[in-house]
Structures are given as C-alpha cells and as structure tokens.
Length: 139
Length: 181
Image: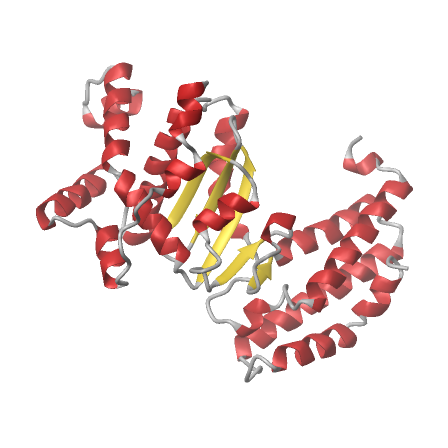
C-alpha cells in the first residue's frame, strides 16, 4: 500500500506511534542535546548521506556478497573516507602522496593521531570480531 | 577500470586490480584499527545503518574519522565493540532505533521526527490535527536552534527547565494529547 492510499486507521496508528516516540524522547531531553553541547548537530543527515552510496550499490547489485569482500570494502572505504576529512582534496595523486609520506615518516596520519592521544595499540582487531574471517572459511 | 585507463593511462586487468586492492586492504588493516580507536574516544559520533548484501553496513562518523563497517550485524554487540561503555564518553547522534537506547548522552535526529510529522500532513491534508501537530514540532525545532545559537542555557541543569518551557510555549503537550490517550 502506498503512503497516499494508507487507511485512516493506519495513519492514526502512525501518528500515535510518533507522538509516543516524541513524548519518550522529550522526557529524556534527547532531541535537545544539541542545544547544550557545542559541536552536536540536531540531525543525523551526515550519516544518512554517507550511507547513500553503499545503499545505491546494494540496489544496483554492485556488492561482492562475500565476507572477504565486505572486509576489504570496510578497510578501503573507511581509510579513504577518513582521508577525505583530513586532506584538502582527495584524488589518486593526493592519496599516493599521502601514502608516500606515511612510508617516509614511518607513521601514518592516523597513527600520529592515535599516538597524540596516547592510545595503546589494540591487541585484537575489531574487524576480526565484527566481520570474522572464520565465517567466510566455514561457508 | 575504464576510468583508470582513461584518466591515468593505467593498463590493469580486472584480476590485477583485484589483487592490488586486496594487498592494499591488508596493508591498511592497521589503519582501520586506529580509526576504531579514534572513533571510540570521539566527543561526538554520528551513526546510522542500512541493510547490505550480507548483514548490514553501519557508519560511524566523527569530526575527522569515518568508519563504514560492511557485512556486520546490527546488534548491541557490534556497538559495544566500536563504542565500548568503558571508553566512549561522547554524544551519540542517531535515529531512534532500539539498539541505540543504552547511550546516556544522545542526540536523536530531529529530521526523522519532522519527516514523519510532515508525512502525516501530506497523507491527510484535510485533517487539521496533523497540521497543528507538525506546526508545533517545527516551532519547538526553531526554538531549540535559537537557544543553541544564542547559548542562553548556562548550565546542564537549565536544559530540562528550558525543555518544559519550550514544549509548553508551543502547546505541543496539548497537541500530543490528541494522539496519546
């Protein structure tokens, strides 16, 4: 059923659900954190924008459908998207220059950020827990 | 492949490109671990997820770090690995999915609420209850943005009072009572 042909009952149910959601969120001040905390946005538009391309790839069947492919995409997309926020511009040349700088300094830009915060290297990679290779090997 | 060939004159077969990307991902695995560490200590993290060809794809964004986890499960265990209770002390900006409800410092997405309210007015344009409800929400949104801009709230204790005043001033409680009985 399309939105415009929804029955009055269905619309009423949606409105009650929305009203309850708003009451619950307002009682916890959860829609208003941005009023108090600098740097917090009132919307989650940035995350939604970031997921638009992956969602489009899924719809057009441009995904690997394998655990190994998912892991590879996780690493490459995360590092490149993070470089996009840290470099004045992102293209093949700027990424190659960046990686060359990592090699010459012995520490990547992300490594420097971790070091500056005095974070100790992780013993286990989160990716191995989130998307374990064992599930790929067993399938 | 065609783009690489056209723009940079790189002659690569599909299997060569595949091998290079796999090698690059092995080299950058340590960088992903670092990104996970940086996200976990961020002051503000935006998150959202959608379904993927296997499992979900879940995005975690801070000011300078981006994590896109493909093929993961959408559950509390995944969140605990990336934003552990013991480490993450920031604000989580998200929609109102149940999986995010354990976070004490949260910002729920206003756009989601407004979109749902606007949708009701579009589906039932002749029902004035939906329009006044939507107008009330928009008024709250405007007041909240004005308060954020002029920094009128001096301390955390002021927020609940401001919320009560703001909600009362636009009569949203009365409008909600049309729906919640």
